[in-house]
Image 1 (cartoon, rainbow, N blue to C red):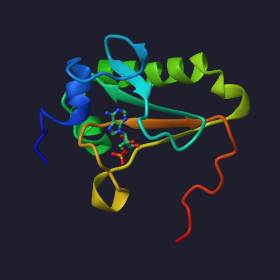
Image 2 (cartoon, rainbow, N blue to C red):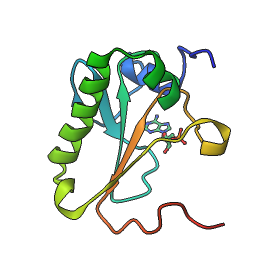
Image 3 (cartoon, protein in one colour):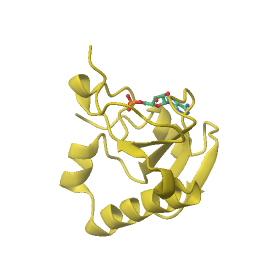
Image 4 (cartoon, protein in one colour):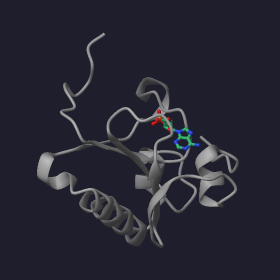
Length: 120
Ligand code: AMP
């Protein structure tokens, strides 16, 4: 899938659209999800044009991969989520239910999160 430079997260990265930013460094930007599914629901995106995890893990530099992982760690630490636990999750493609075509990881916490995948 070709990267769409006008997807909402690309626009947030370019600061064209506001977001409640909680963390930023050279590799990543993290902000509150606009429609939170848990008391803490943060989205973290890499700084680069990657559609999804598959795309990112194929094309991103080792430096960016490490930087992005460390940025996720920093967000987890900043909310103290390592004590009570949390979930990180990335949706991909149509079966994954991905809505925004810029790679992002969800970070959920603040309550027991239940089963890994809700049963239909
Ligand atoms: P998904 O692509 O399915 O992993 O989910 C995209 C997520 O982005 C959803 O949880 C939305 O609530 C969230 N979202 C969409 N637009 C915005 C926005 N402008 N600011 C913050 N979160 C957003």
